[in-house]
Structure formats: structure tokens, C-alpha cells
Length: 496
Length: 138
Image (cartoon, helix red, strand yellow):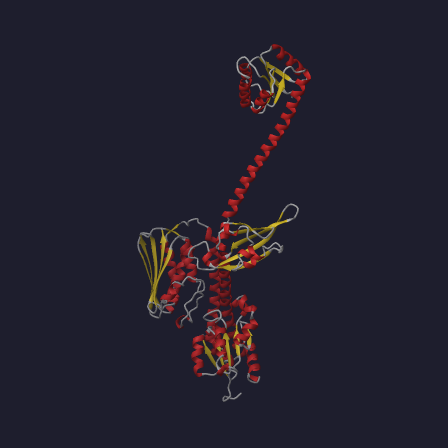
């Protein structure tokens, strides 16, 4: 596209001459005979690359017009034409921001040369300003990226520490400050291995040294005092990784250390290991007993008649039943774990039939002890949001315990009452009771009170763990009150 | 083996059925079989009894009850030469820390044998025969 030029001169000869000369060069040329006319053209939406302005105009003086033009068309080039060429005018006009000064009289070559120079200069200037704009835009982008990255890194819950090529600390986020118990400001610029030479993190920090390019993995325990949560008495277990980071060409820029708190994961793993260990023991014990009972029979240790073995055979049968129960309980626990996140409330259930039928299942066992089984259900109990199977599992465990841990001639009373919260189910026994210090541990997996009275009672310590979880799943709670030697009461409060 | 020189075996285990089976099995072979259902009961019994050999279940009240008991008995002059046998699936029941240092534990508790559970009575009998035939510990 041809460059457009506006000539502003009150002399018609100049206007005509300039137009003709520049038109021959292929420029689009317009003319204005006064300052006002020139501004009207600009305001009318015309754009020009070059303004040729006479210093002396009838309405507005050339310098005032120049300033207006610079405001309205800041990218345009300006040339001042004047017959009164002298140094002062030139210097003054230049100071006002005119790009070039063209003294009258000028030759067509002077004019064409001046315009060409101006356009060349304009092109350079436009390119430079485009570059500058791009550069500024990218700087702005960088600045915002940098601040985003910074806030991202600093709000990470994992500790991050960055060391530069020289092994000096370049960044430590908030989590890291807490872990180290030091402000990042006091660390920046210092050698990591020197600034933090003490403490359990020292080996990990030493690996940030520039002469140690090997990535490292560390697991350390830190004092709870530097923990994020107040009152967290357990030491925290940290998993620390140190890696070098590199530029596009593979040159090492520094190292980054990340510290992840794995205390919770570790705690879970340890709980799981303890569970497995206990389970192995619980499975091995009856197997060991069964094996030795069988061996005694194979050995005929007690003679050839079956009679002397009758008692241990009955025990063998009980141990096998115990194993069967253990397996069922493990399956129950596992299925409760699976529905742990399922929050769908169960359909409302009329609890009375489930209670009566479950208690009924224990009739024979109760008669064998013997203990009296009593059921007392209030009339018009509201329906409860609990699965039928879950309620039966809860009850069979509680009633079963009440029968098993009872004394001959004792009593088991099962009752259900309406309460402001919903339904209170109670199973009360006249059994051996539980020592006060052990009540809180009931419901812990595999926990059984070890005392002479419980020795021959089959049980695996999972029943109450299951009850506790099922009650919790139904949104209720389990209350236990007990007196050693007198009996216990287990209350299940279910919301309705 | 006559009645007068009948050897006394003590089984310490929290499983009553296991203890009763050992009574029958070793009793049939002329041994005097003593049993204890736990650490405390064993210590009470040992106040008046000095068995020729002691079998200890590792996991009773605690995961390492057996080790603690063995260590304690070995420090008593009376049991310096008594063969002590630990019954347990050591690795599985105590976790990696114990199994990694089985030798260290053996020297700490000065145990003579480890037997995995479930233990065979025939296997225990072989250990009894070997240990009681061997000259006493120095």
C-alpha cells in the first residue's frame, strides 16, 4: 500500500507542486490550506504516514499544529517546511518533536529525498516499537508466570527447596520453612549443606551440593514440633527426593529437593501390617491346636479307645467353627470397608421383626448355658434407615457376646425404645463384665480381654469391630457401660 | 526311661488345646508335662519347678512376650543350661524387624531352637530327644 502524505501550506503553488512531485513517486497525497483544514481531515478519519507542515499558517502556527498532530497521530512522521530557515527555528522545532526540517526553497529531489528518509525512518521506528511491544508483552507474561509459579510452589503442602548450580539455596516454600524451622529469607543465597548442617535433614541437604549430581531418595523422621498441626505429637515421616534440573542443552542449573509427609500413609501401612500379623496368629493358633489334637490321636497317646479323645474332638469341632466365624467376620469387615464411601441411605426398616428373629437364633445356645433371653420392644417404633442385614449382624454379635460371656443362670435383656434421637437398642447381660480400662479398647480389631474367664470362650475380637463400623455407617453410635463381675450393657443409638 | 528319672518339660502357650495335646503326647512317653497359659503363670510355676526343657510360645500377651520371658529366664543361674525352644512363625508374627535380626535375637535371648507354628508333636519330640541327649550347656 502506498504511503499517504498530507501537505499543509497556505501557498497554493507549494501545495500543487508537492502533490505533483510526490504523486509521481507513487504516494497518495492530500493537501490542506490551513491548520484547521488539516485537523478536520484527521478528525474525519483520514490517516497519514507523513505530514509536511508549513511553519507559518494563517490560522494556527506550525508548532501548535505539530503538537495537535502528534497527539492525534502519534505514529506519523512530521516535516516542518519554512522559508525562514535558521538554526534557532530548526532547533526549536526539532525540540518540539518534529522529525525533519525542510527549508524553502527546496528542489523536487530534496522533497522526495526527505519523504523517503522519513518513511524509511518510520518503518524502522514501527518495527522497533512492534518489537518493543512484543518484548513488553512477553515480559509481562513472564512476570505473571513467575508470580503464578511462585504462589503455586509456595502453597504446595509438600516442602520444596531449590538450590542453584553453586549449591546455594534459591527458593524454599512455606512448607519447607516449617520443616526446617527457618525463614526462607535467612536461607537464600547460603550453601544448603552449611546453612542447615544439623538435624535429620542434613544428609538430604548435603546432596544438594553442586559436586553431587546423583539424585537421592531419603526417608527421615522429623520432630513433631516442626509439624503443621498443633498438638500433633507423633513424629512426622518424610519422603525426600533430590533431583538435578537441567536446561534444554542438558547443562545442570541446580537441584530441587521435595519433601512429602508420608506419616499418614505409613501409619496406615503399619496398621495393616499389624492387622495381618494378628490375623496370621489367629489363623495359626487353631491350626496348631487341631494339628496337635490329630497327632495325639494318630499317636494313640491316650490308648486305642475313642473315649479319652472325646473332649479334644469336641474342642477340635469348636476350633473349626471358630475358624469359620473368623472367615465370615473378615468378609463382613471387608464388605463394610467396601461400602465405606457409599452414602446412599438405606430404605426405612421396621426393626422389630429383625430384633425378634435374631434373638430367636440364640435361643438354643442361651438354654445350654443356661441364660434367660428377654426381649422388650416398645410399641410403635419408627422405621430406621438401616439395612436389614446390618441390623441383624449388629444384634447377633451383641446378643451372642451377651450369651457367651454370661454366667450360668444369668440373663440377657434386649430392648428397643424410642428416643428423641431415634431408637435406642440395648443388650444387657449379667456376665463377667469388662474392666474399666479395657472398655475403650472394645471395637479395636482382634482386641479381647485376656483373663481366666475368657480363655475358653471362642471369639476372635472382630465382632465388636464390625458392630462399631456398621453402627457408624448407619449414622448411629455405640455406647458401652460395664462393671467387671456384674455385667455389661451395649446401647446402639440409631437415628430415624 | 524310668519314673525316677522322668524328664520334665514345660510348655508355655496361650492355647489351652495345644497344651492339653502336649500333655497327652509327651505324657504317653513318660515325660512329666508342665503347662502354663502365659508369662505370669509360667513365672509362678517356675518358682517351685525346674523343668529340663522349656517350650515358649512367642506371641502371648504381646507380640514378643516369648522373647522377653526367654531373656529373663536365661539370666537366672537355674536356667543357664536349660534348653529353651521358641515356638512361632517368627517372620510372619513379628514383622521384618525381628526376622531381619533372627541371629541377634537368638543370641540376645540365647534360644536353642526356633520352631514354626503350627508345630508337629513329632518334630518337637525329635528336638526333645536331641537336646536332652546332648551334654548340658556350659
